Length: 141
Image 1 (tube, rainbow, N blue to C red):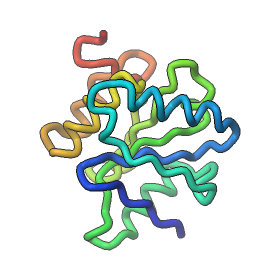
Image 2 (tube, rainbow, N blue to C red):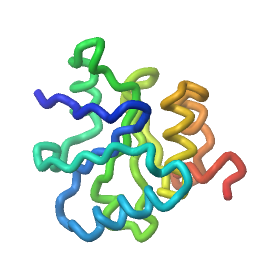
Image 3 (cartoon, one colour):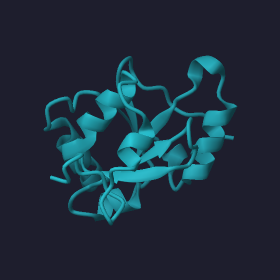
Image 4 (tube, rainbow, N blue to C red):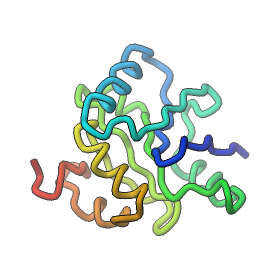
């Protein structure tokens, strides 16, 4: 079984699971960092995670020691790499393990910061997605 990388203190883990396009990965990192609060990401790019499924990550989270448990993470998957908007896949590992929604880099810091400091729950963002399953702010901007 795989184990999850650990994010740096007060940051969220952005885990690369698609390794087909290095330029797309570089663009995703730049896009996330370009917004205020974008420095709240720990980027992990390790081919060990190539093609890993959300369920495998949930299982890895469940198997982690108490000190290493994550409550959520963001995936840079095939959809992220192929979509011009580069939406990450947010994955709940704690409250509703396996629940997901998409979040474009523009909204990454909003979600990440609020989840990191436990100001909001994963479900609050997941419940505010548009018809495509993408979070674009609470006003749908």
